[in-house]
Amino acid sequence: MRSVRPRRIGDLLMPRQSRNMIYGVCGLSLMCAVGCRRPESKADEPKPRPNIIMISVDTLRADHLGSYGYSRDTSPQLDRLAQKSVRFANAFAQASWTLPSHMSLMTSQYPHVHGVQDQDNALPESAITLAEVLSGAGYQTAAMISWVFVGKEYGFGQGFDEFTELLPPPELVDSATSAAFKAEDVTNRAIGWFEQDHTTPFFLFLHYFDLPINYEAPVPFGRMLAKYYQVSARAWFDWLVPYIK
Image (cartoon, rainbow, N blue to C red):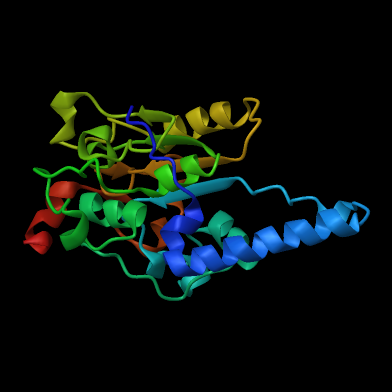
């Protein structure tokens, strides 16, 4: 695994002149504190840094979620989460498919900048990822991904201490059958990792890819929308090909 370049997060976010000014102010504050010997209090203690879990549900349609105004009860759990969360009304993907879009998410760069625009490209070692920044700030980093286009092959492993690829067998990648992978596999691995002892704050990235494949919804979800449709609740990738073209 490539070592993370040691640098302050502040160095990535502000110009040198501003950093020097802030470091100077910090030094002055430190001297005042030592000279006055102000009693220490709990208010002076640094606040613990939060753990971060980032979840990508690949190709999930926002307009079919209740929290975004969909009339059918398709997403009760996500809707409850949205009620006590910050929900963004507008979000724009930087590309039309998994690989370049997720690379933009991880690098904060447009596809023409990070260069991973098709499956013949990989992220250069010189690029800085979100995982590398957090790792440099003392975070433990881990990922569980379930599709090849978010894999180490394309550079997504940069900055992660642990990177678990839950991928289908090579002979099933092109056919994208529903037997290749399941969301519960990713979730079970994540729960197992989450229950370990963590002495430092962590960043955990989870990627789910059940929706874009040939999807047969498990019971009881396969019958949730039966009253709205005359056909079974099943979606096949081949059916979408004419629309993609």
